Amino acid sequence: MTTNHVIRPRVFTSDNVAGASPEMIAAVAACNSGPAMPYGNDPLTLAVEQKLAEVFEREVDVFLVSTGSAANALALAAVTPPWGSVLSHSDAHINRDECGAPEFYTAGAKLVQIPGAAGKIDPDILAANANKMVGDVHSVQPSSASITQATEVGTLYGLDEIGVIGEICRGAGVALHMDGARFANALVTLGCSPAEMTWKAGVDLVSFGATKNGTFGVDAVVSFRKELSSSLAFRRKRAGQLSSKMRFMAAQMDAYLKDGLWLRNATHANRMAQTLAAGLTSIPGVEIQQEPQANILFCRLPLPMISGLLDLGFKFYHDRWEPGVVRFVTAFSTSDDEVADLVTQARAVATKSTLLEAR
Image (cartoon, rainbow, N blue to C red; front, top):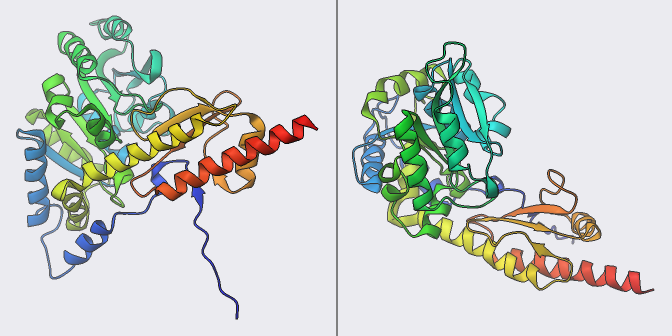
């Protein structure tokens, strides 16, 4: 008799590879009983809006959407006219990985790249660009700025850094947007409140990410500016993001926020990245580029080690930066055993390479 063993993929490419927390499945099943008003007029969606107001400690407008790219593009479109510009880091997701969605939904606004170390925009360069060619009809007008928390390289903006950027934006009349695809991962590391990381520091809109951290298909635009409500509502509908059966999206977000699940998931994902970094550090030839602040780990590996791990079925990004630079991402569902397996196999590959070189 043949027994089929299911081998779990050794995947560390992104937290997008994770499934959904069991609480999400249960919540969606529970809300499936009976009819409910469509397009977000159901009690569960209204309850989620209230719950997010409590999370952020103030009145907010909430627009549930199906993807983070939709959240980013719609938020930026609400504050950036076609003749405007969006100021963001060159490595920002809106610049590199959203296929022109911000430009499309703003009807042609220009993305202006702001450099800066560690994936974070340089405040001085931001200030110069936020006040550049203002009023000149021949030039796009600085209209919004976008920061990513956590950044694409796994670093975090500290509260003081967000505050400085917020002050620059207020002074220049530029709206500040936060791409919070990994909002919870940043929050638990900083040990602050959502309010402190956003509107209290000058943020106007947040793309509140949940899909990477346990839901299976819902993020949200959270706006702290009431005058944007109508624009965001119409833009969401026009973009095909106003779900007729919104209760199923709301059920996920409700379960995500209930009893601190979102914070526990993020804490676990971050811990797995820290454990992985600690394990890899002990292996000769491995260079940790920066201790993980969230759930993303960048390091430099010997090329034979990269090839060896790939041959063993591990999946991770390794060909997007300099030769030898790799990115590992952990998730709420990553287990201690999976991290230990990666470290053990990396050490074995390193030992094998050393023995071969010694022959």
